[in-house]
Amino acid sequence: VELAESGGGLVQAGGSLRLSCAASGRTFFNYVMAWFRQRPGKEREFVAAITFGGINRWYGDSVKGRVTISRDNTKNTVLLQVNDFKPEDAAVYYCAADPNTYFRGRDSRFYDYWGQGTQVTVSS
Image 1 (cartoon, rainbow, N blue to C red):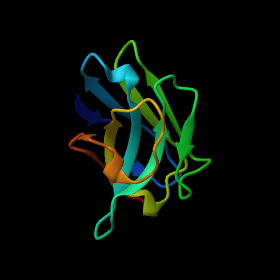
Image 2: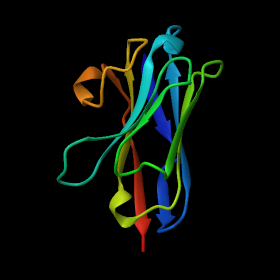
Image 3: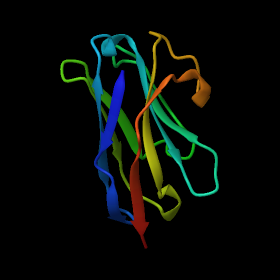
């Protein structure tokens, strides 16, 4: 599976962005898909995950209530809607795939495939 993120950029504090992840591979719909982010000098942080059917979703504590993850298996796409950006949300956002049908956890080591990331900068 190859993953490619898009949709990052400069956003004002309080603003919104929709990040997109395009996946290649015929078995995409079987995978748990997730978003992580990495801030300068920090470890990669779990943001959200969604199971293959799109019914079960998990969110990181720091973003809960402000983000929504969704997927369209017909288009091999995973979306992350982020609202009410805060300065501490500035990071490189990564799309990741775990070749399992069930959610194993928030640890980045569970995810075998990664995109290159998309930078999000927040202006105050």
